[in-house]
Length: 395
Image (cartoon, rainbow, N blue to C red; front, top):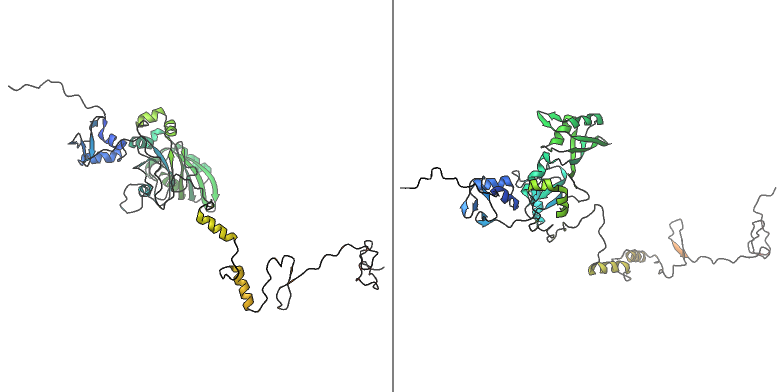
């Protein structure tokens, strides 16, 4: 007779972490995308396909994706990215527009996730991380991190109207949280504003300002929580050090996100590929490149300092001299002979000629012939028979 299992204790539930969460922590995809992969049957644990996201795994379990073992877990890292306008913050765009991840892939970055999103025409600071848990926590309004923006909008507005946004507002049935807005300056038909908010709903700033009669034509995010855009150039990347990230998150957020600073960290920034500028190097706008210290650059500098040989048609000075000779004019003497010559211009079509200036005469005594009188300021013609004319009118 078969043993009756009725009343036998149920098997204890599996401990550990959710399968989708573990996959996201390895930086392979987001947590939501991992759940989609699980339902599609692409994930296997210990050789058995799992089709439910409600499945926990431990460190002893072997996870594979599409038959390949899960990559080794990496420590939590965050990058700061200065997003340029014209790029979409999505992994795949149905309209075929260029995405930021295509730009980041060219830099050799590992797979990263964006903390929140920016519209295609919005510029400025975008946080990137390889930790899906940290991404989820930082996106929550409850985290309390301010997002600051500089906004240029067409139209006119007074500060008193902007102050009303601190209590929150509703636009077309959508409720928006408190917004701190400050009128920075007026520039032509536009105004510049400083805006800070915690919620960050889709197109929140544009919708709220549109309800006030302002048309946003430029939007730049300058900070996200404690992280600042600073002088990161457009399209540039900067790596947040692990000690700085740990300090800024604090124990509470770090525990809530489940960050990992003990595992091996991915490289801060991959080296630049051929023909690309290194993302580790910061460039300030408007700064001219430094001198070329290579051997070819030294030869070019030396050729600039060395005068070209006589008759070389490539030099402007000798081309001009050759043209004068062809027109029958006298070519100017060498520079060594013209040091003491004086250039004289004539009217009536006569060309410029060089003359030797007269030597300066020595100071003569006014009592000698040909001298200049100090007392009355008169001078003789150099002939003993001439009378000196007074400089003033006779009365």
